[in-house]
Image (tube, rainbow, N blue to C red; front, side, top):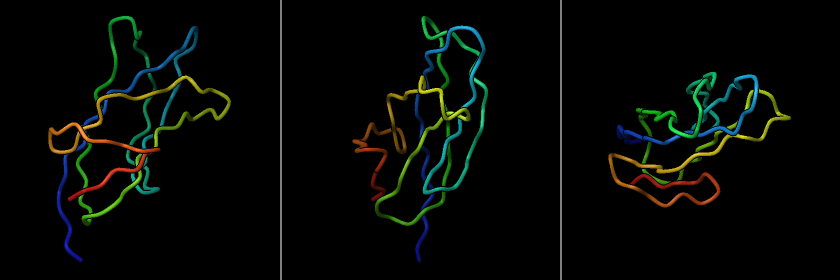
Length: 95
C-alpha cells in the first residue's frame, strides 16, 4: 500500500457560554488531538494543522465534543495541502 503525506488544516469554532469545552478530532477513527477550547468566536478560533500519512482514496474527518451532551462545535475551511476541498458528511478524498 502506497502512503502519502498530506497537510490538513481546518478552522474550529465553538458556541460556549460559561465553561470552556473540550473537543476531539479523528481521522478514520484515529484520535489525533483533544483540546479545550478557550477562545471567543467573536474574534478568535483554532486553526488545526494536521499531518497524516494515508493511502489515496476516501477518508473520514470527525470533530466531536468530549461531553456528548454539548453540541456547540463546528468547523469551516477544510483544506488538504493548502487546497480547499469538498467534504461531505466528514468524508474527503486524497488523490
